[in-house]
Length: 434
Image (tube, rainbow, N blue to C red):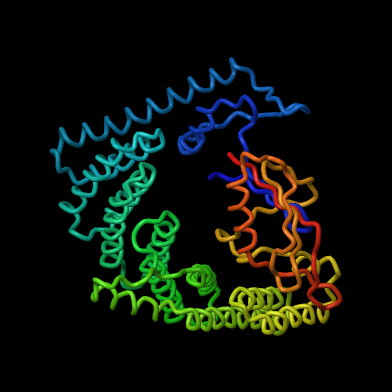
């Protein structure tokens, strides 16, 4: 079920790019290739009624120019490959580079099967000419992985990611850190988790291990107060939120070995342990903000809010209220305007308030309109209550019930007024069914 979600109430705004009416789709799809070739994109000016002033003839002319540039690019790479093969044979040392270039050009055209064959050949040649774990393989492997992802071949992505990880570890220089390697591999584990590829518990465990590895690598090389520790810590918090929502499957009675492994996973991903680790990470982030400002700052207040959110998400309501109150006190001590305080605690905020995990899309100052519309209250405990359906689309009753369950499950940072959490009424959650 595809939803285009709108949350109407007191909240921040988010905008999404849309294709202008009548825009030449092929031109928009070719935008990345145009930029890579140095071809300027035409300016698309919109009249007051939203129609493009770009004429059909101008668009056709630009498309012809794009096609010519692409053909020239292909011919250049093909000529380089042919010349090297004639002069030095099919295993020429310099072939990997034009194979990579041609593969990327094909990839930008959506010709992923052809691109994959070129990337594979380039990897094979790099292994022959530069060694089994040559770093020359890395961009070729990354290109191959991108095409497999675009084609939905996740088994091949998994295989190539494992090999890429091994190459990166064995080819790195003695002065190069491990953190970038760990972060890149962790991002695949996150993608695989969101795509439902493989065992979700294992993905979460791998993500946590890799982000912790990145953090430890940075601290060993640069110290615990290095700004470079901040990205791994934020990624760890994203992982801890995912673990907080994870429920391992029941143990099957007919598989003792599997049950034993699952028992270890449950212990590793246990809620109490996860809560404690997440709290420790936010404490470290608070310390970094405090040290950067020598005392309290807007950054320390934000870290307090983050801590309150984490407490609330784990049903520690008293601890959450204490953290939110301390954040308000810090903002007061800084002489923050009411608008600054309202920006963080003057409105209900769905949790997790983390990029990539926000459960609701938010807009401000627009009348909510959608196929399904629910009016509700966020109470002082941060839960959606008194949910009433406003639309009359009976054909969507089943989907409306699922939307309502989603809303009821969502936890909110409540609105604060006079230093206390309060109810916020007459909020509307609107969903368009695509």
